Length: 143
Image (cartoon, rainbow, N blue to C red; front, side, top):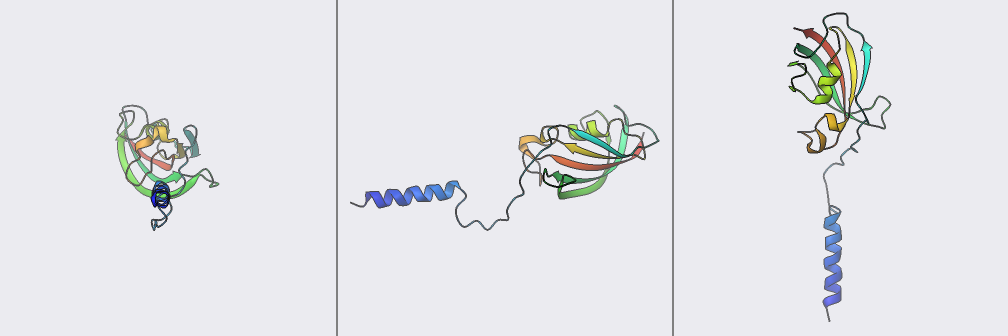
């Protein structure tokens, strides 16, 4: 009878496919981690107009994936840019909006944002699901 070797071979194939196979050439993804809560750290306290709900804020930022093992929590750098948004209007992720609220022009702040206040289980683009984020933000203008 040949049933037993065939069943064993089939079971082995299923086991390999369940763990991603044995011949995966894709690069290893970094471990996804997230801070427990939103943390705002002022590196420089601004002296200009304050970012409050309803005001348009222009910010420059750098974004990293959160890494619990890095001394500064900065994992893989994702992007750096500048943009404007209306504070409190859901124009951006909740953690960023909450993190910028209360800053004054000229201020620089580091935000540790949990996944639930970022892109959550869905992720977005290069941001994996359930990833926490680290932003360094400079508030340039409030109008």
